[in-house]
Amino acid sequence: MRPFRLIGTLMERMMRYGDCLWSAVVAATLLAAPLPAAGQQDKGKVSKVFSCEINGRPVYGDTLPKECYGRAWVKRINGVIVYREEAQPTPDESVRRREQARQQEEARKEAVRQKRQDDALLERYPSLEALDQRRDREIAELDKAIGELRVDEERLVTRRKGLDDEIKALGEKPVTDDIQRAMNYADEELAQARAAIERKVNERDNLRQRFDADRRQYLEITSPGYRKD
Image (cartoon, rainbow, N blue to C red; front, side, top):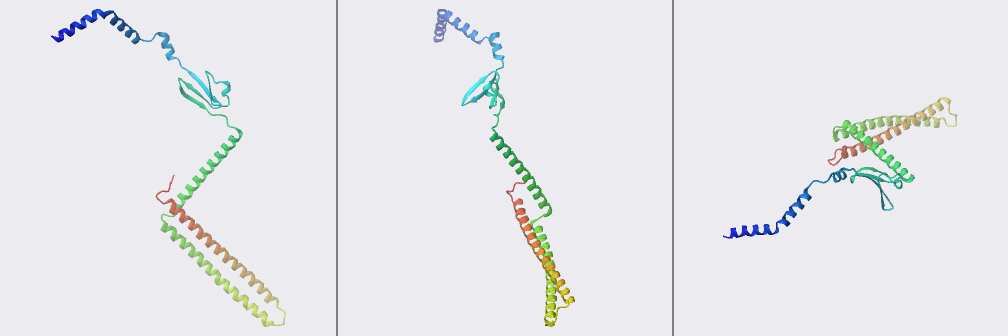
């Protein structure tokens, strides 16, 4: 019997409060209805705003305000930034930016040069062992050349000593023109031989230094953590 009582109660209340319930339904229907034409036009309107900041205070305008000229400003459409203008640099900032750009360009060129040098080194030496073998071979060739020059130097020193002995044997007699020319020629040859030895020794030292530098660079560019880009 209880369900019948509940149904009866609901029907009684609907009859008593029917007008109120009907008003609520009408209000809800109006709220759910589409916006009028004027509202739809406002909704579709595109909003553009230009703005900048002066001493921490924002300045707005439908067009770019005069106060924003030369400053950093932004353009928004419906609240979304679509363009950003940077402030005009001061003379000091312009100098700093040019210097920064120059340094970046120099760094880029150096990186390109270094990469080209690294690639050439890897192409020249397929392995570290090949580098060491070529170093030892070229240094050995220079050592041989230096040794041959030192033999010539000893020969010239012996010849020069022989001329000195001839002059001592003359005693009080004057040195002949032939002996003097021979001494001058021997001195010239000895000086040339010693200069050639010095050049070869310097060449050998420079060669060793170059191979040492190549070896360090080879170890670096073939290490696991080296960047090859």
